[in-house]
Length: 116
Image 1 (tube, one colour):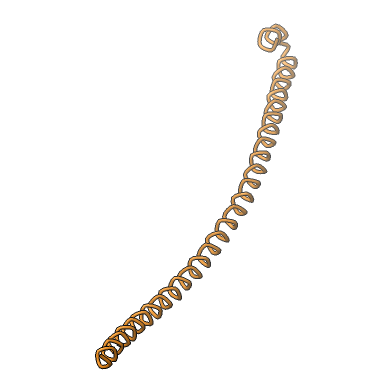
Image 2: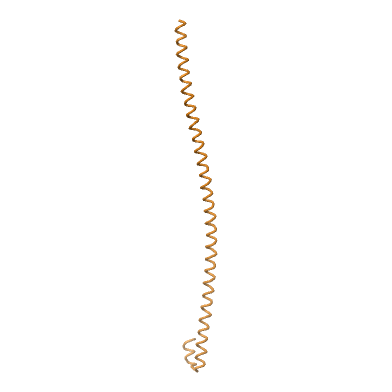
């Protein structure tokens, strides 16, 4: 009976050693996988930081371009107002010249018909 117990104990020991080896291999594989995942997470976190930085820079650039556009529109509007003012002054000056010419030629009737 002792041989049977010894043999049974030996078989159980071998089974446990085999199980231990399998578990050790699995632990190593899981550790390797965890390191790989940690490395991937670090890489992705760095990529996210880079993309966020790019987004921030793009937003800042867009804000600056919007500001420049608003200034350009304001300047354009001011120039348009000045052009209109100068056009009115030019038209008034031309009318004045026509009136002056008509008065010099003694054509008073033509003045009231064409200018008033």
